[in-house]
Each structure stands twice: as C-alpha cells, then as structure tokens.
Length: 224
Image 1 (cartoon, rainbow, N blue to C red):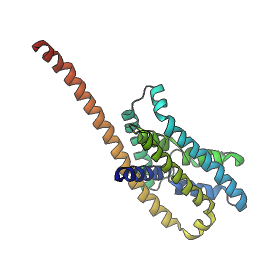
Image 2 (image 1 turned 135 degrees about the vertical axis):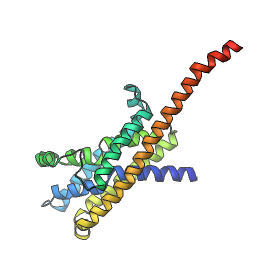
Image 3 (image 1 turned 45 degrees about the vertical axis):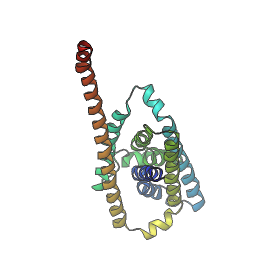
Image 4 (image 1 turned 180 degrees about the vertical axis):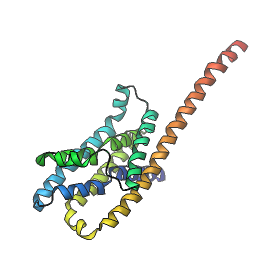
C-alpha cells in the first residue's frame, strides 16, 4: 500500500511540476481576455482534453514508440532530464518558456490558440511526454494505471484553474506568481537531476556487466 501511494505521489508531483498549470494559466488568461465566461470555458475544455489525451497516449504507448525508434529508456531519462533541467532553470530565473516565443504566441490563429500554444506545447510539450514515458518504464499494469490516474488528476486541476482564471487573476499578484513559479522550478530541477543520475547509473551498470562478461566469462570457460 505504501509503495502504491509513494508511486502515485511521485508521479503526480513530477507531472504537475512539468505541466506547470500556472504557466498555461497566465497565457490562457492573456489570450482569452475580453471573451465571455462561456466561451472561455469552452476553450479551456478543448485545450485540456487535447493535452490530456496526448499525455495519456504516450503513457500507454510510450514504450512502443521507444522500441520503434530503438531508443532505450535510460537514454530518454538522460535526454528528458536535460530538457526538464533547462525548463526548471528558466522557471527559477523567471524567464519566458523557451519552447514558445512571444512572437509565436502573437502570430497564432485566434481560433486555434487553444491548440497552439495552450495545449501544445505549454500543457503537453516535450518535457511532459518524456516524463510520462520515463515514469512508465519498468512499471507493471497497475503502475501504469496509477500514472494514468496521476495524469488525469493533474489535468483536472488545470481545468479547474482555467475555469477560475478570472477569480485567480484578481487574487494572485504578479510577485506571488513569480514566487510560485520559482519554487516549482526548483522542484522540477531536482526531479530532472534524479532522472539524469538514474540514467547514467544504469548505463554504467550495464557497461560494467558487459565488460565483466567479455573479459571474465572466457577465462572461466577456459579454466573449466
């Protein structure tokens, strides 16, 4: 039971931090200013469903994608960790999301802004995709189910935040948003470092194991 709870909490925390609903919320508020509440809710629903659908797809089919392109889970851990570390550093230094520039946001089609940049890549970008794939690596069916539940919970919270965007904007000052973003950036950086170290450790273990087989097994065979 404790292991199940620990798995869920870790998965929920990692996904919540990399999705970073606050970042998507701020962009959503700026791009829906002047819209009626009903229209805002429709855009919120569509953007959340699209991003959650993508995250769930890679949670289920991530290993198949890796096998298709012959990518090891540890390679993805290291690559994904580097991406997350970069995003976390930018969050801690209060820089603009490096994946989406202000120019791209401005030039996006008014009717399709819920797709780009809200759903992709703010709510489900390379960091989210690599995170869910890494989390499911080595998990059994119940572990994958827990991660899927964590994904649904994160996007459910994000949806509630989007629907409450007007009330949140009135109560949350710009300084408060910066503080929260920097704290999330620190947590994300710690998770990223752990992913990188795990990937390197597994690579080193496999390398030592292969070296042992290559040099010592022939000697044991000859001695026998």
